[in-house]
Image (cartoon, rainbow, N blue to C red; front, top):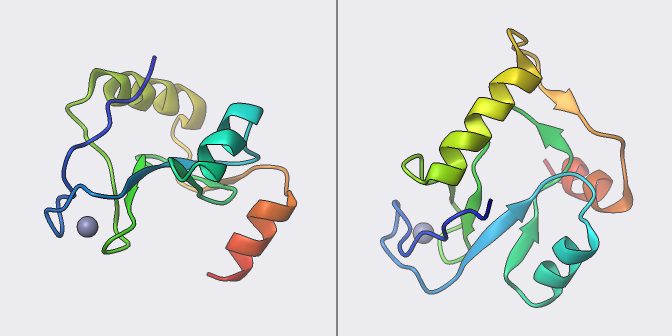
Length: 103
Ligand SMILES: [Zn+2]
């Protein structure tokens, strides 16, 4: 299921540069999206209710919780995380180490 791309950023109201946030090690498709500026690498940290989209204009991360694909994703997240409150780390990779270090 594809996530529906939001048309505007909830913070600054602009929609000119909204990119999908790829989590963990990007797949081949993920890399293509990053190279063509459709997506950004979001690092390796996994947690519940992760934002799906980044507004590059103001730098805020958000998600559209009314998107059916997001609602489905939240259901999978609950199954994955259960009652765990601690964030889950994916195996590290060069992309994720650099973005995690910058935090
Ligand atoms: Zn914005």
